[in-house]
Length: 314
Image (cartoon, rainbow, N blue to C red; front, side):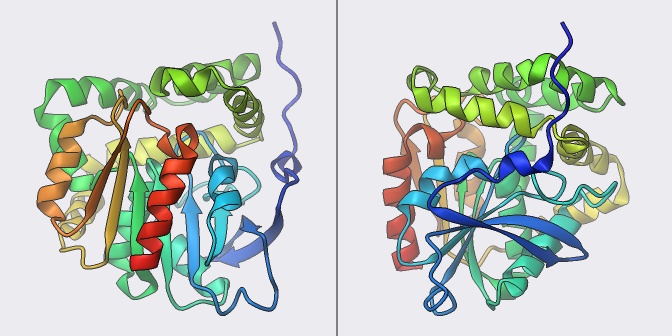
């Protein structure tokens, strides 16, 4: 059965207690969503930037946009996603860190706390190392330190089997894009279900979120851009730029760090988090009971509470 026509990027401008903006940084235009904006106060409040994971867009942070207070909170469609520009290149760790550093400045701030899920968490780690002057602290959800995740995936069968099959499948040209978007992006929902906890899947919130995600990934070039993140993660390991990037990631992380992981996450297991604790012993590590890979969506009240405590202390 043929799917419906590809949607326009405007479908990502979902109404709510937030405003939508276009912000130019690092040579491209980003779609940015700001929570409860106050033109008088936003410049005086600390900036928090929310960075989504694979196959998603700013909507994954809807609960944090509604729930976090005392800061200027913005969620971004990463390069290639949602309502942001979709250039043919720039999906490497160096450029993505530059995107985030540029966004901090373009939003009128000198520093920010970065909050990221999965691929967005990798951007947090990379920005904190490559552009440390703009990062006040980082909080990540199911996103261990990249050095720890790589080591775990290559040395432990369970983490390798969880992570590598999809990563390697995505290295093929063209076919993964068609697979991800056919039948109105049914495969994306299948992927999310395979990594999410059962409690969230039974909620109306899950169905609503899947409807938005399945629409957003079908925006022209969005699926290709999303897959380019995954392709660079693998192919760079065979190139000098990837080895140089991983050497850079071995530098000490000096900013405050919060790591949150659902204890039922079948995609990011406990071992890379333990390895992260050795690399970043000053971090705070939180486990969310009965949550899968999307703890910020599956148990937003608990995650918001942890984020609020972290922001107050960092």
